[in-house]
Length: 123
Image (cartoon, rainbow, N blue to C red; front, side, top):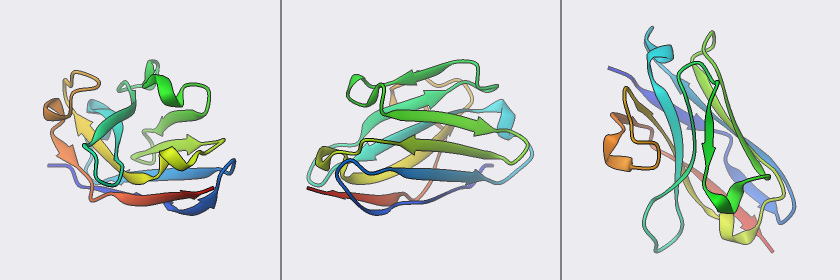
């Protein structure tokens, strides 16, 4: 069992930055690939970024490439999402997810989810 708790969301102006954190419980964090997803207002949840178990491989949706960076610290059981050059269209609830063998961008293949953290980007 893994529990995930996101933090770091908030209100920021366009062009600003935020760093999201997702803290995981348990001693098996390094066994899980980790992903970040987001759900904009009135829209479906979508893939944002993912990272492999040891952090050697990262994946991004095209719309955030060059602006967002996913990383993890297995010693701290934490995954991060550094978001730079934020745009109003990045406004969403951001969720982290853990999967033993996920298909990277496919939500249903992740085993555990956090409750989400709100990110609002004003224009």
